[in-house]
Amino acid sequence: MTIITTTMKERGFNMAIFLITAPSGAGKTTIADKIAKLGVWKECISNTTRPMREGEVYGKTYYFTKSEDFEDADTMGVFAESVRYDGHSYGITHEEIERVMGTGKHVYIIVEHGGYKQIKKLYPDAIGIFLHMSKEDCMANMLLRGDSLEKATKRINKYDDEIKNRGEYDYVVKNVRGQMDNVIYVIRYILTQYKM
Image (cartoon, rainbow, N blue to C red; front, side):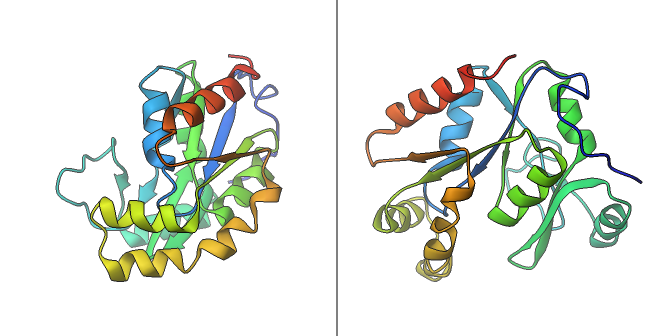
C-alpha cells in the first residue's frame, strides 16, 4: 500500500486533525473528552494489541487486535502511526482518520511524541497541541485516579523527556490544577481558527 503525503484539503476534507500530546496525568483524555461532548471534535479510535479491560467496548474504547494481525497491517502501511507502549502495540489507521473526517467534525488523536511525528509526516497540516502540568500535579493526578505508586513513578520518570519536545508543537497549553475550564476555553478557541 502506497501512502501519498497530501493535505486534508487536497483529500477533499475541510476539517482539521488535532494531535494531542501530554505527559501522563496532565489531563489530556479528560479535557479532550469534555470538548468532544460539546460536539466540536471527534476522537479517532486506536487499534491495540493489549487485552480488553473490564468496562471497555470494542470500537468505542479501542479496536482490540491480535498481535499478528496488527503486525501484518503495519507492514502493509495501514497505520498512520504505530507505537509500542508497555509491551503492546497501538496504532491509528488512515481509514479511521478518514472515517471520522467523514462525520463533518474535526478529528483529534491522543498520541505520544513518536506517534505525533509519524502522523505529521503523512498529514503535514495536522495541528499539534502539547498540554502540560507541573510534574507534581501530574503525579498527584495519576495517584488520585487510582494508578499504583509503581506505575505512576514509572510514568513520571518520562516527564522531563516528554516536556522537552513541546517546542515542536503548534500550540503549548498549560493545565493548572482547578482551572480545567480555562484550558477547555483556550483549546476551543484554537479550534475556531480552523474551518469546519
